[in-house]
Length: 199
Image (cartoon, rainbow, N blue to C red):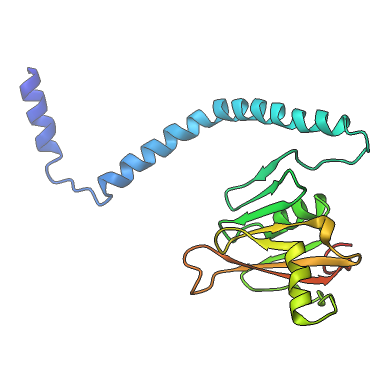
C-alpha cells in the first residue's frame, strides 16, 4: 500500500464522522493549554520582578527621617482602579471597573485617608455626614479644598491635609445612565468613626 492508498483508506473510514464542536473552540482550547504550560516560567520571572519592585519602596521608606511608613512610593495600580500619590500630597483615584472596593479602601487608609469605599451604590449605612458649617457657597469652597474632580466622571483627587479633624470620606462608585461605560464617583464628607472610615 502506497501513501495515496493509505490516505484514501483513512478518509473513507471517517466519512460518516461529524464534529459538533466548532473548530474555533478547539483552536482556542489548544492556545489555552499551551499558555498554561508557559505560566510556571512566567510566574518565576514575575515574582523576581515583583520582589525587585517591592524592595525599592521599602528602602525609600527606611530612609525617611520622620519614620513615616510610605505605603507605596508613587502608584498602586490594579486593572480595576489606580491610586497615585502626587508631588503636592494629593491622592488621585481613577476607577475603571467596579471591582475590589475593599482593596481601594485599604490603600486609601494606608495612605492616611480615613475612607469608606463601596461600589454599585451601596453606601455604608454607618457613615454620617460631617458638618462643615457656613452658607452653601462656603461649604462648597471647603469641600473643593478637600476633593477636586479630575477629567472624566471616574477621577477624583483627595487632599488629605485639608481634611478637618474628625472627618473622613465616603466614596461610592456606581454606573449611571449619564456617565457612559465608566463608573461615576460620588464623594461625601463624613464623620470618621471605626464603623465608617476605620478610625
